[in-house]
Amino acid sequence: MAKIDFVKELKALGYLVQEPDAQRVFFEYEVPVGKNVGKKLMLGFEIGDNYPMDCPSGPHFQSLGVAGWSEPPNNIHASPFGSDWRYWSRPFALHWNTSDKKAKTYLAHIKNLLTTL
Image (cartoon, rainbow, N blue to C red):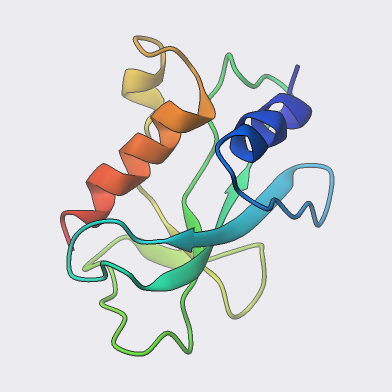
């Protein structure tokens, strides 16, 4: 298990996943809800060796240059993905153990976060 499983799940959902190193993945994501609906950005996650027992970190996002992008209001940090990426500290860990522990469920968490912008 681990990152390879998360990548397979994302690909099954239709995402073109890029893997810059052993722990990170990212892909283009079109925002389905909220102030940023229809805008595209790069969405990234760090996947630990214990996936799916432990949920991905994140989200990390690269939205610089996306016209009219509405930033999250707080808990934004530098990201190890690079200087043009940001980390939005919104963990799903508390709910992960009561979920099916799948990428689609984690992306539902991200979608829910985006409704708050």
